[in-house]
Image (cartoon, rainbow, N blue to C red; front, side, top):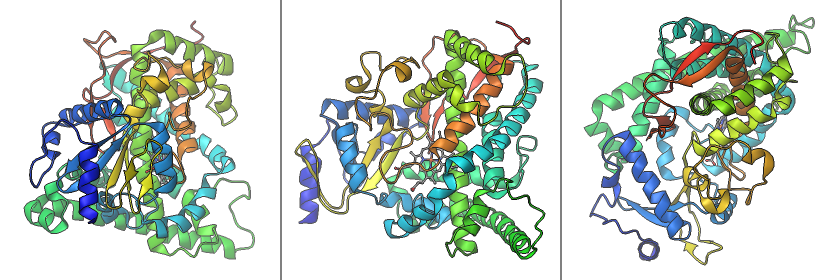
Length: 484
Ligand code: HEM
């Protein structure tokens, strides 16, 4: 009976594409990462045309791709369980809040949320500013050799900032990018991203048998990451206990605290396991996402020099000719830069897709009822390009839209998702990206990479995160002090 209802719903919202026995429509995702993304975009477009919801069969699993904010609002406010596929990430993250079942997620979110208070985040800006300076210095060396791929610089900047604010250690990955921890982390993400598009590997036993080498490599990386984190947690815990027991603690009262310290001090009775899971979530959720956000912003600034000059003018107003570091007081003054980053997150959302599991029937505003047992894919990418919500110039990069218009629907802009399970780190991410971009644009003029006029479409590909096909390649020219 349950399956009958599922098939009836799938047929009602069906697409023109043929569904094959056993694999359904998953064959569409064969090919390169770029092909996969193009398919995904095409399904999103079909979904608009069908009123914002359309079916996609991955094997016997029914997914509904949703692109209409009014429908998304209902789903994300009522369905909090992540789709079963997300259990793959639990191999590395355990019950860390991002992919945990709701019963575990709810109390953990309550504990984690206060650590992201504005006061704590303000205290992190000094770390962002110091790490951005390292990035900008490293780029100075690299730019002398010609165009640079920004990915290495931005991703190690975010890795160093996130690790320092989470664990209190300077990973120094900007200076030593070959660290085993980083490589292990990348390896796990790469293997999961590939597996998620291949339903024939969803079953753990089949995956283990047929992808033995990937399975073993994942397992080795996971163990390395866990060992690394456990070592830090144990030593930080011991240090903190010592500080608490010594009445005249050396740490000044007003000095900033890492996420790990805040979690240890919270009333939660966390042991090593929960601390490892939660801190790993922050490192995983916070690193590549913000790096992709800054990477696309850099590409767009190179493509739109007039926007970049407006950003520079605003920076001149706030910093003048001084090369002092960015402080948290500066960030709210950088309103145009804020709009530029938002517009970049709209057109190139680092997480283009999120999922939910439908555990009980949900009646949608368009009259359709989602039935228990199916799953939903919310296409953030497609929502952000829907002309109904963004106008006829939806595909254009126009940061001013965030200054002169209000959103037509609160879920029409959702790079950090929407509802009770949305991103906890959105303010952290905005502050980190603003600091990095301000540091970069104060020092460099960003130009398109060699052979690029800036007019080309940015080709993108599908990983766990959205990435450009041609890396984040730009040319950087040092600015002269006080130039207009
Ligand atoms: C541009 C940067 C970022 C983007 C686009 C982004 C986006 C997202 C998205 C789409 C989700 C999933 C929500 C869902 O399934 O509904 C999420 C969850 C989460 N993000 Fe972010 N994120 C970013 C940066 C960060 C940073 C810097 C941190 C931490 C320092 C962070 C911490 C988290 C956490 C803890 C969750 C899990 C929330 C929960 O399940 O309760 N994120 N993020």
